[in-house]
Image 1 (cartoon, rainbow, N blue to C red):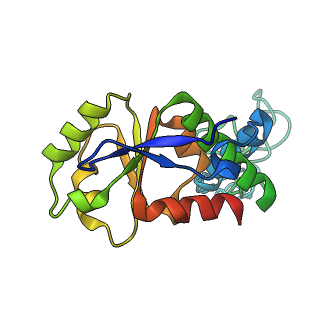
Image 2: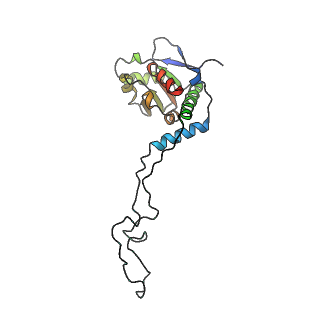
Image 3: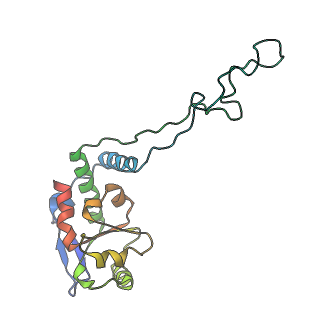
Length: 208
């Protein structure tokens, strides 16, 4: 099998960049990718939804009327769920939605999604030196010449502010650093663009 390659965009000469075979030609395990995406999405949930049960609503401590002789249904409190101003039946409480996924499985999922993009031809490497200043127009032209589909995930280094500012205003485009890159974003993306400076860091995250 030939070593995986990706086109180098933004360079003066048209050429391909060799990719790490252990990262971009890995086995795709859908169940591991699913578990990792589920864990990442759950980690973003705040889990602060809550309501008061009948025991938490203020008032209602005394019986509203005597048990017998009134002709009305018996009642022990005015804070029962079927009363106006009463508590909520089966009230939701704050909870932690986090799901544990082993580090080895996370790395495997990251390699799988990167390999899938490389195999589909939707993975590109960007020469960030071409952005001497922020330019959204240059970013649009570059993506137009590449001809890949949105949504787009751009991975740029912390120091590559010109690249980040050039792509972050594009519709359906997300700019992240290698440390912020998640499997869920790569699954969502129609194409992925990684700068040359960030490529080593991305490959490092997938292997260590």
